[in-house]
Amino acid sequence: MNAHNGIGHLRRLWRRFHVEPMQKYKSALTVSVMPKRKIRQRPGKALEWIGRQWTVTLLNSAIYAEALKDQFTLSQDGSISTQYTEAKVGGTIFPHKNIHKLAWRSPDGLTTNQIDHILINGKWRRSLQDVRACRGADVNSDHYLVTANIKLKLQKAKQQGQRRRQLDIGKLKCQNISKQFVLELRNCFGALDTLADSTDEDPDIHTKWETIKNTYGETATKVLGYREKTNKEWLTPGTWQKIEQRKQLKAKMLNKSRKPIRPKISRVKTTKNGKAAGIDSIHAEMLKADLDTSVKVLTDLFRNIWDRNVIPEDWAKSLIAKIPKKGNLQNCKNCQGITLLSIPSKVFCRVLLGRIDMAIDTKLRQEQAGFRRGRGCTDQIFALRNIIEQCLEWNNPVLINFIDFQKAFDSLHRDTLWKIVQSYGVPPKMTTLMKMFYNQFECSVIINGNLTDWFSVESGVRQGCIISPILFLFAIDWTMQKTTSDKPRGIQWTLFTQLEDLDSADDLAILSTNHTHLQEKTDRTNRCARQLGLNINIFKTQVMCINSTPHAPITVDSNPLEYVEDFTYLRSLLSKDNACSKDISIRLGKARSAFARLQTIWKAVQPKNQDPTVQQ
Image (cartoon, rainbow, N blue to C red; front, side, top):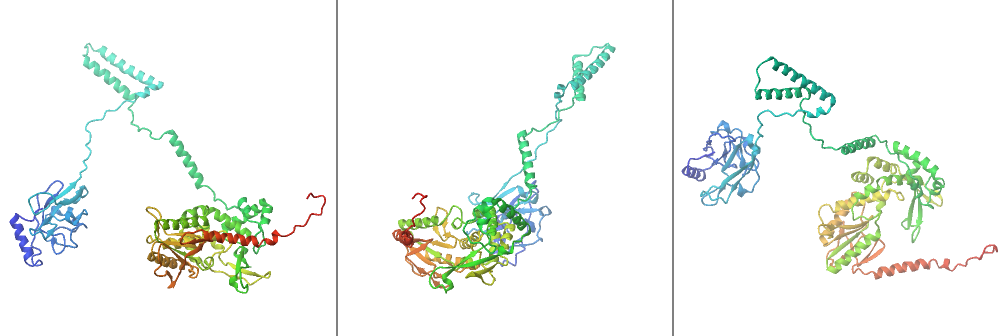
């Protein structure tokens, strides 16, 4: 479309709209249209901005989101033809840089506008592939060349004429059809011979050939018929056999009855001997005395628990035995409590854990090595020593914060813990069975052989339970996952990954290369742990710096943490110079002390056997 007649008109409009007040002459432009075309693609020039403070005499549907300016006003008062009611502005459809949308630059080179457009009928909108301005085209004008890519899909031409059909000659292999064809053919030729004998004229060659051709064709069409077009079989018989086998296996899987929960003999055998029994006074040796009977009665009990979601009351009770540790035993902190649970309940928990332990292991972070199959403290100690060795060799700084939680097992918030367990994909049925052990969970302390009053425990996980370590790993793994999810703050481990921490249950070693990152990770760990009821022990949490000088202390709730030269991590002494001599000396001292306490046994005199029948 063209909105001006010549360069003179362009200059007059330029002078009119840029010298005089813009708002006064805002509606002075009109739009004239070019003759109608097949696709209605109309390149041209419209001295109107598709942007602020200018009027566009097009409909709302013509302008798209890629218009150059921020906003525009629309008016339907211009002299627009009815054939433009479905026109689309191609330059506003496709995303490009602004320099590829601008179509005109003023003579002074300071002003650029998008005034040249390509319109296309809405019916052919999908045929338009791209519209942009080409700045490098030499057209001897202050306007840039606006180009469009159009892709047309031509309709397939229909074939004219009748398709030749093939006779089904294969039916002649059948004896019955072959006899019928021969009989019909003889009858036709016999009738023709009778007709020829009745006439004295001898037909020419062409007439005889047409008669023979038509007789064969009509007879074959009547008896044999035409051959129907059949698609080639693309599935082999072997494939159909596999499909049938899959259908049978699928039906077998869907119609399979629920797998009952049944304790295997191995689950009972793995129960350790010599362990104190719970309140039910059933020992592991009693279950192992007759494995067949034990498995039979426990299977029936476990099935009822699975179906009814109810456990015996004794399974939700535990006994606490005091074990002295050190110092004044009148102080409760110097005694350690050992929880005694029901042995059959441990077998049930072992069966539950056997169903989910392999799936759970794939959900946990690789940095966690506690309570996991094939991993242990030795792996974490070796990895940490190797990190310190490499940092010393390459003179790279690293800061390690050894975090310890106060009474971690006894402080977990259970409601939050169950939500975390479900978020890790544990089936709701398994979660419900785990919750049963904590609903109305009660304990009693054994003092001089007597039991105290029962009291409820509403936080933490049960000590001595088979499932408790897995539940605790969920809590620690969720805490560290939230801590390291925002951005990397660890040390470079591989070319594209960073190592944030090394964990063994609740013994955390947080790694960073500078003070700021370590402080941020410590704060995030503290904040996430508190959501689970865990609190960092500021007296046992210490920081070690390798190839770095501590300037400001790492703080936890405004409490500074201690900087140390060495730290005992997982019962192994780690030092900032990575020396192992001190750790070896400590281990030898512990072994020497243990042997010294056995001197009374080594020096004991063994009584001689007085029975003469027994050889000395």
